[in-house]
View (spheres, rainbow, N blue to C red):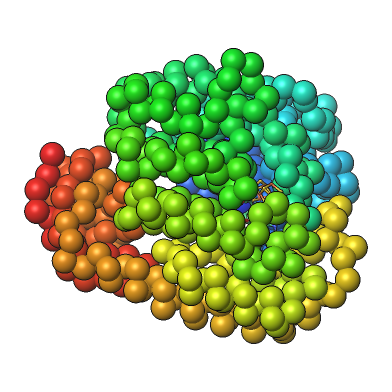
Amino acid sequence: MAKGIYIHTFGCQMNVQDSEKMTFLMGAEGYEPVISPREADLVILNTCSIRQKAVQKIMSRLGRLRDLKRRKPTMIIAVGGCLAQQWGKEFLEKADHLDIVFGTHNIHRLPEMVRKVREGGGRVSDISFHGSVPSLKIQASPEEGKVGAYVTIMQGCDNFCTYCVVPLLRGPEESRPLDEILAEIRCLADRGIREVTLLGQNVNSYGRNLPGGASFARLLREIDDLGVMERVRFTTSHPRDLSDEVIGLFGRLRSLCEHIHLPVQSGSDAVLTMMNRGYTRDDYLRKVEKLRDVCPDIAVSSDMIVGFPGETEKDFLQTLDLMEKIRFDNLFSFKYSEREGTVAVGLPGKVPEEEKARRLTILQGLQDRHALERNRSWEGREVEVLVEGPSKGDPREMTGRTRGNKIVNFPGRGEMKGRLVKTRIVRAFLHSLRGEPVAEE
Ligand code: SAH
Ligand code: SF4
Ligand code: F3S
């Protein structure tokens, strides 16, 4: 009889994709996805360590599994991902109901580790790093019926921004060969996928360690030349490494969507220097200006951190000023969270929690105004929507995204799923647009 697997994914899209790889690998071992941990024989928490809040959430979720395991002692509980990478064996000491700890480079070993536990081999852990990441080669199986999919183009990060744990937990940067990526995209297209998001911590440096002159610009062009993918997006870009060549592709490559996620982190030069970001606020403003010159409709989203050590009120006002100048379509903003092992731990000028909270509230208020204003600029215009399916609340309502990554809800029919529908935007909200269908494929 098939066994049940339940994966709870925390953190970023890398983890989402890694979870899909785990599902694929364990599928070959006879494990089928179930909808709740209660029905599962194997529960995996794919963890994240980016901020302390993520760690708290994971520990409380793990705590709740203790009772379940008591009632069903054959259940195997595993933790993978970034927090597992960070804590390693110690994780087994922190939670005595845990069977397996596996790191970000050891996904390929999961089947073998599960077998070992089932055969009574005791609790196991492996967080070893590998020079060439075997898990980069594992195929991910996107959920049945999805319109879009992720494609990992690189692993790891060499940037060492002073606040960030990712380089410590994902290892050094490594790009995937270009032909492998193209083959995967062809394969996804054959399965009906119409939109891919290329994944990496710093996609702009793609190809740096590959022989044969691969670059991110070349990758985007070759994907476009395949002619099989309707839409291509990517995340994340590092502003320092965003080349004029890549900027020039927006509005020119048919498949490349008019949206860029370009995390800025702060609008103050002093803070950017302390963060080791490698660009100034002026560099950033100029890059966005160039993007808007070549592609006036481009949507720009970003990440921002408030309360980095040493951030003064003046620095914070610089951040608000940068936001006023750019007017982001969407912004993910965070209170700085101190991470063990990072350079920022030793920096002076810690900002009190209440002050971080105050700055975050002000920043988010401003962003809400900008987001609504940006969305309103679409009212009355016709946009192409790739339909993802019926909206959750009402089956007569369909939902999808524009090329600029804005959510559009409109009256439609189930068969529209996966199709391009031209809609006229009749109303803008903070997080979505309302459309009327005008024409469909
Ligand atoms: N590689 C990506 C982002 C990875 S993490 C990039 O360079 O842009 C996603 C976001 O989490 C970051 O952009 C940053 O805004 C935020 N972040 C990372 N470490 C953080 C920390 N210690 N405290 C608060 N936010 C953090
Ligand atoms: Fe972290 Fe910076 Fe690397 Fe992004 S680029 S993952 S923020 S170290
Ligand atoms: Fe979290 Fe690791 Fe992603 S720390 S944000 S899961 S790379």
